[in-house]
Length: 286
Length: 288
Image 1 (cartoon, each protein chain N blue to C red):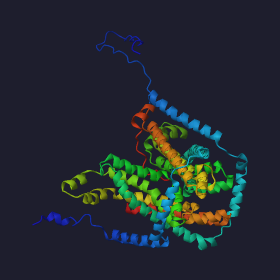
Image 2 (image 1 turned 180 degrees about the vertical axis):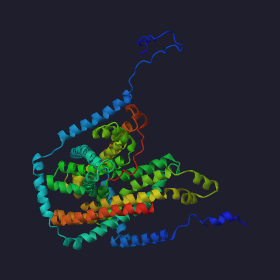
Image 3 (image 1 turned 90 degrees about the vertical axis):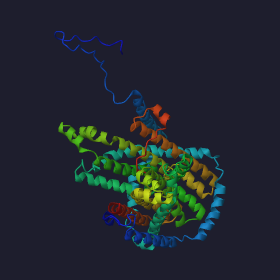
């Protein structure tokens, strides 16, 4: 650009005291550098390509789509009137079992996730291989869906609520441990250094230095995960892991849509109730 | 003699209140009661451990001999995830915008909020059951189920993000006499764009996880293959499928982190390889 600089404009008037400065070559302002724009463009390109390829490859039978509204109406007429009597016969007990699965699973996950979270926090355990191993446990717990965990535990313990509880617990370890470990890493070092300077042993540093700092985070993680687990435990029964999903599965297999309607209403009510409880508890306690 | 100032301090600042003790006792009683209800016993755990040994023995080594079936399922899962995310994001944007109470009147925001709550309340697998009935077995049911889940999740977070924006910029644009569309484009969207990228990539991740599961109820993808292999006690094939699913999900997570680095961290393609795109995840987004 320097060689092609335009000649300096002739300054108007007689020789003024400050000599005219060399003009800055006009350069439009760009928000992003070309490399940044290229990166963004590459992402857009990949997204568009992925969508186009998926639309072309996915196997959709259009005839099924055309009669979808008809099928929906059929579904609703079969669901209504709902078989409310079924609630007392089977749904109620299964619903309670679902809540037990979610709660016990969350508690077990909290107990199991705490040591793993501590091992993953670099400021508590200053050893990179140990942190890495703990994080690997957390990632593998999270990448396996709770339905897959449920399938595995049904294979081991047989169908029933025990498999569901363990599935919920193992799926939650990764979530709770990751957030708990991050909360520990963000703790202020001041109180901990003060405790260490006073000669406090490890346990005292944990209970009086870290725990008061991470306590709000811990309880809010626990509540949040419980809310998620209530939703998840409702489907575990589809693979035989106990709870209301098993009632749903048997009603579906027998095409008893009026019973399915009852089960869905019950799940909806429980999920909304759990959300209200979590919001209220969070507002009052945390 | 102690100085009098210490007398005003509580004896032990870490002493727990009476309620926490009551809560702890209640919790222990609940655990005992619930374990009795679920018939959890030591004997069951013991027989389970013996079964687990057998089970693991048959799980390993993984059997990749039917890789064509596996690849077909994974491809379909991937297609379901991509299309459901695209459709879900496109639909969630107007709904989320309408639900924001600081921009819209109450008569518009309440229906939109109801849609979001309804879309969020059921697990995608349950929604998939209903769509299988409506549009038949296959990938379409999975796409529709995950689209609904995406509308619920992105709609909720997008609404919250818009409700937290600073209204000063909106007012400034409005004061110039800009139309509503311009207010959105220049006053609202730039403030929520980076958070939106966070939700969108997270949702793609979550749809990828769930698209491998909706097959259990016949809505397409590798889940159907997995469930069939389980029911046939074909555990070495199950292991192969699980390894592939976990690999796919981890690749998806790496890609999502890359996209976040490019759009939120203004990284270039070269930066991604240099520093591995280390960006913090958005907190509390994980709820698949």
